[in-house]
Length: 210
Image 1 (tube, helix red, strand yellow):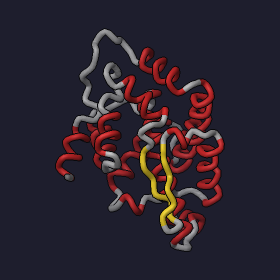
Image 2 (spheres, one colour):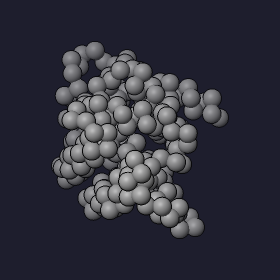
Image 3 (cartoon, helix red, strand yellow):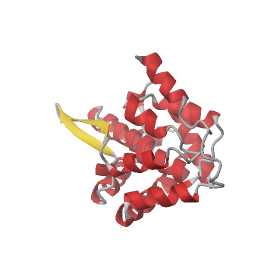
Image 4 (cartoon, one colour):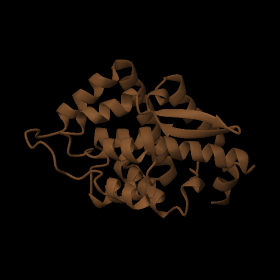
């Protein structure tokens, strides 16, 4: 099964698409039309907050560099269960609330409580995945993401981040950032929340130690 998932992920972001599209402006238009204005505005706010958070964590003024550092962190971490962002617990809560209060999270993720633990799964009927499906056939940057997500379900973030960096994609591209913010970052944010609340060690302590 892991071999099958790896094959799916290897197809992620392979630059083979309709060459009649000179840039991704049409893909962005289709994505936004599918999501709707309210969710697009919510995404803009969330992305701005994530930009600022990653810049603060990795101490850089360059947004793309901050996203690259974040992806490298996903690759280098020994386990996805151990993902923990170096931000305060209050900031974690604030960021999670931004996803929730705008109803954006509900269009990307399903959350089920199991023994008081939030279990995440991609919302296969949500607007986010539907939008990614619509642009998959002609957007070179994000091509393959829909298949990786809809077929593999919860593939390895380390593998996905590795292949994304390996393709040398523009990490400041609207659609690439949208995937990272909506999927990768939210998962890591929830992991951070779980690790800091269940292990009894606040992020403030870790930050001070660094």
